[in-house]
Length: 86
Image (cartoon, rainbow, N blue to C red; front, side, top):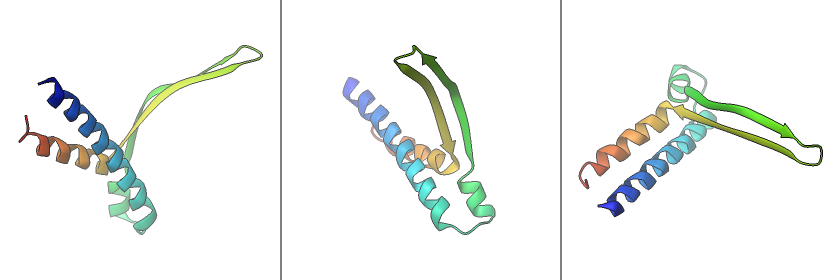
């Protein structure tokens, strides 16, 4: 059962990443219009970058997620595909 769990999580991650890749490709390929605006619309959320300056060292920490409509469609496709496996 644990193997299916990790496979499912890795597949979800791969679906989101491949959806983001396709979304970036669509931004370059599609002409300006409603379809391009809809498919590449993104929602961003996360933590703002936090900078720490120690004089000699500088650290910056932050984490931001960006979801597009295409990445959501890829995520739904992965979940639909894996419902047969679980």
